[in-house]
Image 1 (cartoon, rainbow, N blue to C red):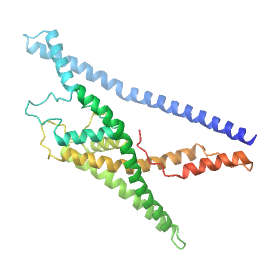
Image 2 (cartoon, rainbow, N blue to C red):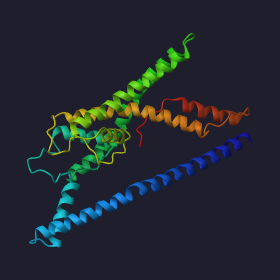
Image 3 (cartoon, rainbow, N blue to C red):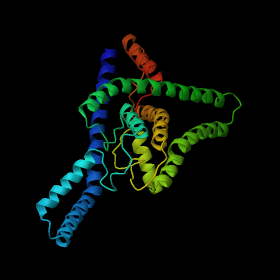
Image 4 (cartoon, one colour):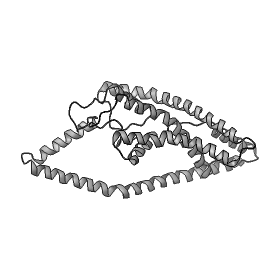
Length: 294
């Protein structure tokens, strides 16, 4: 009977979580539609107007020829070729860019602005990801354990008798603030300076990248009008990997807080099976959980 009560409670909270999750998706869909649909329509109308002006200025072209040229540009863009500039643009597949691409594969970021176009490259990419993603997870898990060990050490230090509450709070805040500055605040400054973005755009790129969402609307080192140092994108890839471990730890902390908020940890029961089930859940939740956010 107690076990049945625990199962019913688990089903009830699971259903609540599913409904809350669906509501969150619906809310996001409505807000994005409200914010972006009108701007998209204006951009589409502006583009059509520019095409009409182009045809008026170059009467030797007809609409069909212009549409074919636009299609050529779209195909080039889909293959990772920037239509701006000329044939002297740096290759997308030099070592630095290839290193950056390899990092986006194993971290599952996948910006979408560049992909293998040859059959051999596509086949290799599949097997490379097949083994690389678990390897990346293991690597980030190990980094996360190291960060978690520092957190445990800090927690033990601040909870020693005689430590003032203010000192405890300041110590933990300093630890979190240091990671935030190093991984989320300073990098956008660098990207903004190098890429010519605003700080808001740099921060947007940073978070979208480290959360592995990776829309591909902002990608470092892709402006053909700028000259980058050869290891720029390689350094960016290294920064991404180490930042992912820290951000995964933060996301895990947020997940734990969310679980507590939703009361997903059932109260203990004095009866045998229920108590064993709850103890098992608590033991599992106490284990380090570092993963790639997705």
